View 1 (tube, rainbow, N blue to C red):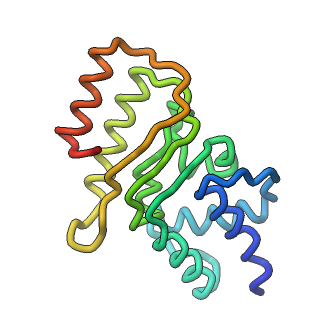
View 2 (cartoon, rainbow, N blue to C red):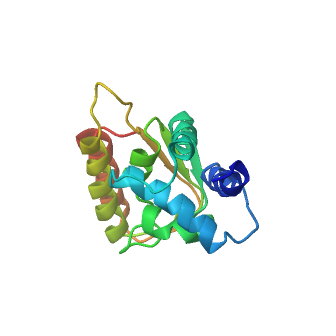
Length: 172
């Protein structure tokens, strides 16, 4: 592998994770390349790429303290970062596995929040708490949901979910 073969896909991925409007299609070969690296971090398997490429990817991922995501740019990475039942819910547990030092995740285009969204989010946040060895890694502690278009919950029910997330799961 030559440097030019992997720098473009990694740059696109970095831009997507930093909220940049990429305005271009990711070619299947580039997507497969980055997706393989992501999957190797999520399921802890060895990737087929040379060690120096994996090191570059890991260095980028480990340096991220803040992630800013527009779901529309995740279309190629839906399987890695978007919930199957709830297409507007990010898999914050997978994000925390890939970006082990991330402290804040911004979802810029959240969309509709429903009871299913909140229940699945609670499950995901529990996974984030379970996935980390407290002595070795910082936990993702703050998630900012913006671009909410509609809330399909009674205000008391929403407040109950928020209270549970903050107090029972220890989230901001």
